[in-house]
Length: 378
Image (cartoon, rainbow, N blue to C red; front, side, top):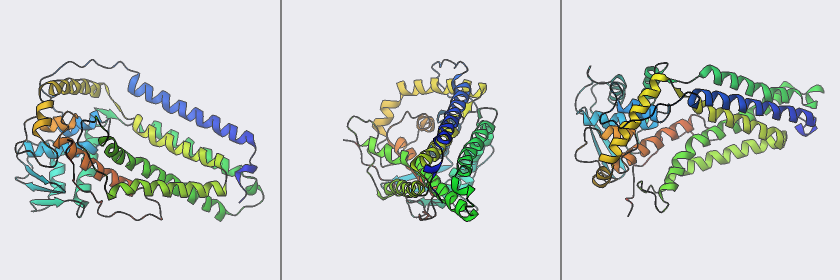
């Protein structure tokens, strides 16, 4: 197939204009949905808002992301006496103390049933058996999305779908502009080119999903950071492997086409990935709940943050989980054991999501290895 270097410069200029217009469209939509309406002023609250569980609180604070919510849900279940959490260094044991009942929020019941199917009462995970934790995480995210949809959060999927449709149309138009196509290039050549676009794009998205967990570890090692130090492990090779695969796929795309066309593909993939999250926005009811949660976080930060950070040392489950421990984790107030526990589970879920986007030449990590290993900051 002839390279896109033969495509007239005017075609690239027009494609760049389309890319700029798509960015403007996404940016306008995100500003309108997230910042266009006046935000409510947070007032210090001494109790969390009613009907907002710790898991839902984390989901709202994280703007529709569910990774931290699983940690908040587990700790909330432990506080209420449904679950016992025992963590020592690189292992974690969850023991069910009683079955879910009508007093539990739906999202917490979902987690408990997913982790303990049938008559099972004990679940251990440390990088050997994580499949059930994956299932619980994804079921929780689905439950939170269903509960929050329309009433508390809106994903504005229709707007994003319009952007994706335009994003697909742009490279297709460019491919059809190839002079080689006018000379009778075979359908197999077009499919081959599409394969490398898919490979490079999927590995690139997977790398974007998994790099945050490794970057948080690197930041925790910097002097002055107050969070627990998190040493690098073998799992941190995964983002490097995904990035290398993305570069390989995109590099071959450059060879087949040109660097201009490849940059166009990278720009489109990045735009859609970033704005998929930015288009998540709270409704008016959600903004009210967020203001109340931020007011409650202010109270927890003043009243309990220092004490919790002193008493809850990383690497070992606290002897007693207090009434608002789950909310402290959900709202990012506790930087000791709770933050460590949440970060471990967040890393586990991100690795699982990244592997769902792996390229054809990358192995799937079936068990989603993770070690619950933290070095206390001295």
